[in-house]
Amino acid sequence: MRRFLIFLSLILVSIYSVAQDDSEAEDPLEYSLSTPYNTIYTHLSFLQDDNYHPEVAAKTFNSEQVDAKEAKSLAIKLKQVLDGNAIFIDLDEVPHTANYRDSLTNKHRYYLTKKYPELYVEKVGKRWYFSKKAVRNISKWHDEVYPFGTDKLLELLPSFGSKKVLGLYIWQMIGLLILIFMAFVLHKLFTFLIEKLILQLLFKFGYKKLADEVIIPVARPISFLVIFPLLILFVPVLQLPITMSKYVILALRAIWPIFAIVFLYKMVDIICIYLAKLADKTESTLDDQLVPLLRKVLKTFVVIVGGLFILDNLEFDITGLIAGLSIGGLAFALAAQDTIKNFFGSLLIFVDRPFQVGDWITSGNVDGTVEEVGFRSTRIRTFRNSVMYIPNGIITNQMIDNHGLRVYRRFNTNIALTYDTPPELIEVFVEGLKEVVKKHPETRKDYFEIHFNDMADSSLNIMFYIFFKVPSWSDELRARHEVLLEVVKLAEALGVNFAFPTQTLHVETFPEKKGNSPEYVKASSELKNKLEDYLKKNKN
Image 1 (cartoon, one colour):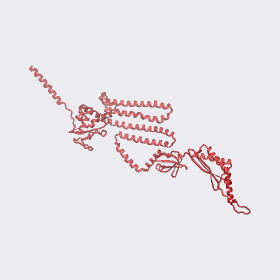
Image 2 (cartoon, helix red, strand yellow):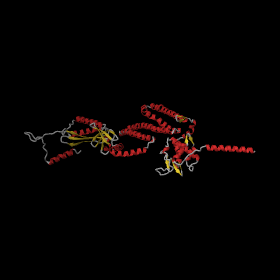
Image 3 (cartoon, one colour):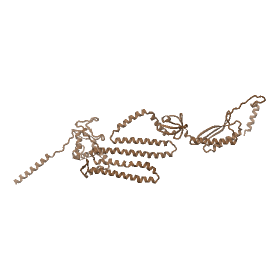
Image 4 (tube, one colour):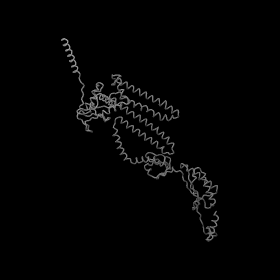
């Protein structure tokens, strides 16, 4: 019994000694949270592939705010968010001072990245922890970087292998190959759907020109508009090395807007083709000029906005650029007041429509036909076949006489007859003139004035005041020709002589000749009798 007790004692001593040796040989994991640098370094370094201790990385979260299990999950998610966004934390720039204060807030805070303003570490007591705001937002950020449940792949893909080839794990290489294959298949699928189905339908219904000139150029970038977002979605799942991931994601985000610009640029052509067809159905020709201008404006807008998106995706600070453009735009506006005035003048023309292309207008000293309305000036073809450009800011401030909006075109002239024309013939001729107007297809029938109107120096004048219902000046001249020709034919048929300026020389005394002056009745009683006889004769 005594020997047994001694043997048992020796065994216990040996076990204690071995345990003591093992405990001394096991070097405990060391970490520090005394400075912003130590806290961020602890979080990142203990989640590396060769030093994976998430329970230590979880120490960077205040235990009074979250429990150990949740802190471990948040630490892993935060690392995945940084890797998925290719956010590189340069530890050399992180302060090593325990009492560090942010220069803007004057608080014990250090912000990790501009992309997430709520992601910062703050001092609590003598230690630095991730802030409460960061704790509340990590899950939301994680869902944004890994939407649609793609974060589940992070738990599956690493199990495919642990060896590295060219700096990548086997599962990462397989993931890249899968993404490339998926992009190729989707591109072929969209090509098939567009070329074989949509284009065949267009060809069948006789829209081959539309398909060749519009649909095919628009359809080509469509597949890339779908493929690139999918690549941007799945590349973070591969957890590529931070430098590689940064440039890959930046390249994908910068290239994707280029295809969007091409697609929208082509879409502008389709929209303008549709608007042009609508403009063709309207009577106004001004909207025909508006469509090309609208095309230029929309294309310029697409290119500028697309360029800003590309710069933003390349992580350029476009806020300063936009502010600079605003200040520069103000300076440009002050220097180009006349240009801006003309631009708004063109807008007023398109809105108010005082004239349209093809109208004959008179504005100031300009008289001609409108050929084009631009953003700066209006082009007018004068009747001497010269071209005048009037700034829109000027023409909108002037009185505009639009001859093209006339419903009727007035024609006013005097038909001069000789003084020897009998009164009865004058009456018949006037009635014939009225019939000429009534029978012409392009004259106004409800209003015209044809009367014996004046006794001029050498003629008896008949006022010929009529209106033509014609669309253009050329049609008006043609209608005048036809009417005046009928007037001449009527005069010839009735034996009416047209007067022309003449002078008659009267010789009052001549040997053995009487004077040409008539001998007037001087007795007033005789004159009154003649007047009464005339009134009685013409009473009925």
